[in-house]
Image (cartoon, rainbow, N blue to C red):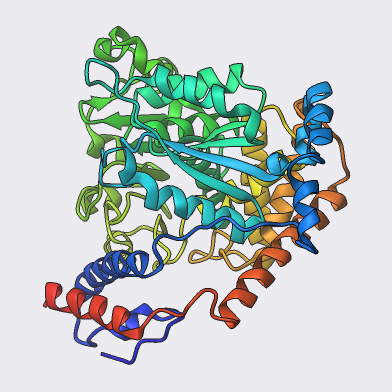
Length: 484
């Protein structure tokens, strides 16, 4: 094993050279999980609250609080929209979850989602200069069931303090009702990142993958494996972007979705799945292997693998097949196995493989764009605009089978995305204020720079201490021992 570089740039170099590809993939997963636990314990979480206004003498507290602040309260009372400029509301997102579907771990109890929600807040701040706070809520009713109405009521009540809401890790079918109700009834954007976010970034990757293989979105045959909120929304956005519903087939645990699925039709809570049943799979195919024959694209967001997606399915796909295996933390099939089976382009949800379909490329810029123009909602058109913004940014850099998506360190991409989304919000008539594309871009870049300069200063002065290398060594030893 090599000496650990704190930047973690080359994870593969940390592990024994005689590890197989499968051992390497497993070891990296275990290492990252163990390091997450140890580093979160070291830091006590990832986020904190700091003032943005200076203290130049103690009389400034009479300005920031009573009696001076009374003028702020009455100004907002007389015009509630003033709250976006007289408080931090205009740049503040609530990250709300009941923690019932946390990544690949399922129901983690309400506080169990805090690590993910704090992570969401960290990414928003670092990547787009957006402030956010994690709010994990107890959605149980008196019957001991998770009640979507409790989440709906909670979000409606917190609206006055936030500029937008990011829903996260809410299990289906509750997630459908929560999102669709709040999108229509709230006066600020409510965004479900597991659904709209995943849909937007997946569409971005698909756009560039199709550009590489020179196939038209309206002509491709698409197989969707998994029918949760993510894949259901991906399907909806792909169809809105021009795909042919007659050439799309989606599968859940009981088979293909089609008009004969009376079990789905009978449960009104799964209305989003029933919409797909009505539009797609006219041949009523129920076998995944059969559906994959001649398919151009396979998009899997089902359960962690490996070997959930079979190599045989890929072998029978059409020319230059595209495979998205995006379960976390382990993809439904490892990229090397998919490539061995004939996949031309493979994407996953992980950053240690090429072509990470990463929601972090989407939600910070999308929410920033919505906040900049004080949007009342995020439309599907805004999500599709974001997808093309991501795809076009990567295309300018030169796309290839191993580069269909921008990287997280391509900072200007987030500002491009924010500006594109802001312009689409204005076009869609959901913006409270208007600005030019350049104004949106420059504002985002300035906020990102301020955030990163602040973090760099805090690290340099040890206000954010460097973790003890022993933490990394301990995580590495656990991972290597577990795989050997």
